[in-house]
Image 1 (tube, rainbow, N blue to C red):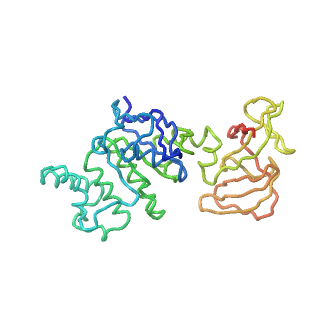
Image 2: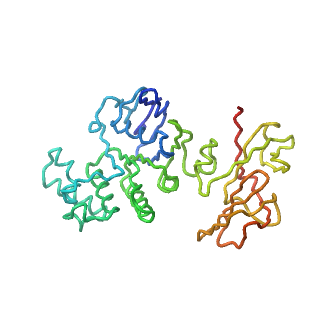
Image 3: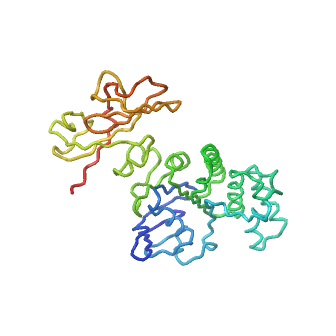
Length: 345
């Protein structure tokens, strides 16, 4: 039985549809991320699962039980917010144990559970500090601890790392992933950061305009994007798409250039062709191109190329000596070409 199931869930704010017929099944112990740009409906979806927003239509089930009319407390979920939401006048220990106190648990039981959670999150030496005496990462761990101490059936994370600097975000990702591996609690994570989603998720639901465009593992989402939107949203540097047409010979023609494909498609089909930057190689073979921009980033060099089809990105290992304006050729691996049928106007 799925831990969480959304069946044709929609949310309207007046005439505006924030979510449209969202269907999603999450297994017990699974870590699923709702990924998308601002306004795509991911936070609204999370809030409906939490019970913070009412469902306009459709059903939300938890362990087979319809929960549309249940309060957040009755759903047994714990939420970690972007702004931490810590009580500034309370110590770390009191912040973590506050929800247990409100439930009327025995003080000794609260103390035991707070100490256990604090040890798991490396907060044991900070229990007497106030939030103002902690770093951003430490405050976020306290917020996670406050959720964890309740021993809920489901964790919900609403962009919890967006206020942290890049280095601390990477550290917190690793901590959350390790925590999930230890506890195995069903978790739903919301973010607009595709690298974050790729690094921590069992599966990713890419959302756009209130709908799930694709649901799959990080590998599936990256290597086999189901839609044009997913292909361009996932990946850094982002993929560039070029308009073309399928020929009788099973190739795609872009301008005067013909590129062979590893599979046959219907001749005459209008398509867009793209390839991930790491599958482009520069040398003496391939399509003619001109170097526009060279960006060394340490382990790789990102090269922006102009060619007859528009712009092409190449990500080459190590440091590469190229100058803007240099002529080169770009070899495209036919096994990694992505092709999307163009929408007719």
